[in-house]
Every structure is written in structure tokens, then in C-alpha cells.
Amino acid sequence: MTGLNIAFHTIFATPAVFYAFAGVAWGIVGGALPGLSASITMALLLPFTFGMDPTMAIILLASTYVGAEYGGSIPAILIRTPGTSAAITTVLDGYEMHKQGKSGEALGISLMAGVVGGLIGMVLVVGLTEPLSRIALYFTAPAYFALGIFGLSLIAALSEGSVVKGFLAAILGLAISTVGIDPLSGVQRFTFGSAELLGGIEPILVMIGMFAMAELFIQTNMPDWDKTSHSTRIKLPGLKMWKRISIPTLIGTTIGTVDGVTPGGGSTLASFLSYNEAKRWSKHPEEFGKGSPEGIAAPEAANNTVAATALIPTLTFGIPSSGSTAVLLGGLILHGIEPGPALLTKNPEFIYGLFGGLFIANLSQMVLGFVMLPPCIWLVNRPKAYLMAFIIALVSSGVYSVNADVYDICIMIGMGVLGYVMKVFKFPVLPLVLGLVLGGIVERNYRRAVDLGYGEHAIFLQDPISATLLGLTVAFIGLSIVMGIRKRRRERAAMSIHAGAANAAAINSSHI
Image (cartoon, rainbow, N blue to C red; front, side):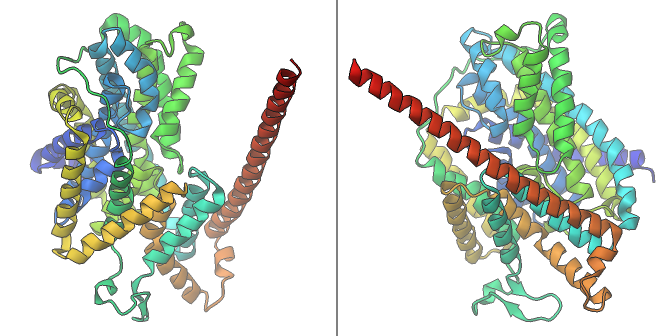
């Protein structure tokens, strides 16, 4: 059966449409609540996918990602509080349009730019995934190991904060992945005599703890968000408006494509770059920051394009580009689907079924954007304490439902505390999660490769793909360290100049 036939079969002969609509609806709600990012919204849903058909479960999670990218623009426009980090740039012009009485028009531009970006992104995903998967025939155990190390180093180096903190977080994730029984020798590792740890620490518990619980802990110290009017209605852009926002939408889609297929990118970076480039090429750059429709179209198109194109490195190489795709990667592994170059050849029904479901998800935004706006506004106007309490109850019940074990809730809370401490000390969370998810793949292929090489590590350099990836890893780490040193030197120089200017001003004022 061809890929197109598989996609149509998934759409019309399975409940994929229902899960696509449900995922987008939940994503819009989660994205619209300030403090809940796309990754947190997906992590909250993750335990409820346990026991579902793998294709339906991943369609549900990926559709949530799609919906959350639009949902984040709702509070950004209405109350100047981005629902997701990627919607930060939408605040600049969206809230200004809201103050001018153009809330509905701003929401309509956000919705349509996102739909266009998402559909173009899905076309690119379908076109690029199969060519990239053909390299699966050339991947051996050493190459898979090197690919995992390269992905970890890339994410660790590109994460916020210092390079050292990124690598420490990745190493901690790899260490957590070794808890349990050794898959080859049967020896217990880091269980500390606990029977509950014999099976290891499930990635789902770490993800929910790191993304959801840690953010809830942080939100307890944050002030309540503003309220908004219940009378807002979406107004879709007309032909005249489309002429104005077509170029910014194209710019956002282009940047979102490049950023999405680049491991270590993400929708936040794409939104900033798209906003800057849209302003550069605009005929009315002076309107940016004062209520420009172009300033909404460009970042929103980029966000939704990334939500689609980020699937390419996640599915074909097992390297997520953001926290959201890391959760998606964890969902794949939870349901027994190992991402990598051979995924398309081993599971074509899953890949093309997922593509079909995501096309429906992007189209469903047209309907759900209107339907979900009133309940999202109602939720934003609820007291923050009630919403946080509801989310904690939802998280706890979802975690308990996986194994019906209170110990899982304890692990989840412990990981939440760890995530909170990491955020306080500005350690990136994504490298830790990726280290945990990829830990088993890296370890298995490392030991398999060493066995094939009769105990000699030279096999990693004899394999051309492995040698290339390891070389790129070393080069990238070195470059990241050098760039980090230069950045710190520039910051110190700027601080010294500022201090000198302040001292000179103080001296002048004392003479006066």
C-alpha cells in the first residue's frame, strides 16, 4: 500500500480525525493558559496515551503541539502575556492591536498565518522524510551511537545558559537512564535496594516532573495574570489584508522550515528571526511594535511551520529540536517506536498515518480557532490558584493511571523539584530529558559496536559515518566553548565600560 493510501486509510478507517481534533483543542486550551507551554501541555497528556494505539497516541500528541502554537497567541494578544515562549514576539504588535480595538482582527491573522505555515510545513515534511530515511541502509551500530552522541552535544551546546551546564544536564540524563537492571548482564544498577527502581525510571515521569511540575512550582511565586473581555470574536483577514501579510507569512514559513529541520532550533528562535526579517523587508517598518499586522503574521507562521518541520529530525534522526519534540520523542519510545533513519522502512504505516492525521490537525485549526476562543477566555479569567490546583490534580491522576502506583507520583514530584532547582540555577532541562530518552539507544549501540569490534574502540573511527559524526561532535563542542568564552569577554568588557562611565559621571557630579 502506498504512502497516500495509508494516509487516507488512517483518516477514514480509524479514529485519527477524532484524536487530531481532540489534540488541537487541548493544545489551544493549554497554549492559552499563561505558564503552560506546548511541551507542558503535551506532557500533561502523555500518561493518558498509555495503552492507546501508537499511531493514534502520537497523532494526539503532535496535534496538541500544533494547537498550542496557536493557543499561545490568544493571551499574548488579549492580556499581553504569551501563553507559550514562542508567542513572545506576538505580544509586541498583537496587544497594540488589541488596545486599538482590533483584537478579533489580530486573532484572525494569527490563526490564518498559522494554518498556512502549518500546511506548508507538512508538505515539506512529507517531501523530505522519505529521502532522508534512505540513508538507513548505511547506519550501523557505531553510526547510531555516534548519532546519539552528536544529538546530545548539539542540544547541550545550543541550550540556554553555559555550555558546561548543558553538558552536565545531558550527563545527568544519561545517568538516570542507567537506573535499573542492565539489559545485557542482568546486574542491578543504582537501585539502592528498591524494588520499584528495578524497571528503571520511566521517561514519562521525568518529562512530566521536569516540564509540568517544575513550572507549577515556579508559577506559585509569580503574580496572577491580567483579565480580558468576554466579547472578543475572531475576524478573518480579507483580500486587502492578505496582500499585506502574504510576504511576512512567506518569510515566517521559510525561517520556520530552516529552524525546524535544524536540531537545537525551536519555535522561539524562529519567531524572533521571522519578526526581525519581516520588519527588515516591510514597506511600513515604522509600524512594527505599534500594531502592525505583519508583526503578527510572520512569527505565527514560523511557529506553526516549526511544529511540522521539527518532526523531520525527530523522526529520522531521533534528535528533537525543542522541549515539545522531546516529549513527542518520549511518546514514541513509550509506545515501542524507536525513531531513527530506519523508521520509515520499518513502520511506514505509522509514518504516513501520522502525516495524514497532522494534515487534519492543521486544517481543524480553522474550525477550532473559533470554537475554542470563548472557553479559553473564560479560563484565562479564572483565579490562578484554582487553575494550578486543577492542573496538579490532572497531572497526579494521569501519572497514577499508568501503573496504579503511588511511587510513580513520588518520582514525578522529585523530578519536579529537581527541575525547579535546575531552572533557579539556570541549568537547561532539555539536555537532561534528551539524555534520558536517548540513553538506552546510545548504550545499546555502544556495547553492540564494541562487541562487533572484539573489544576495540577503533571500530568507531573505522566506520565512515561514525567517524564523521564524532568529528563533527568534537568540532561543534570546541566551537561552542570558544564562542562562549568570547561572549563572556564581551560581557565583561561592556560591564567595565559601563562601570567606567558611571564612575566618570559620579566624579563630574561631585565636582559640580
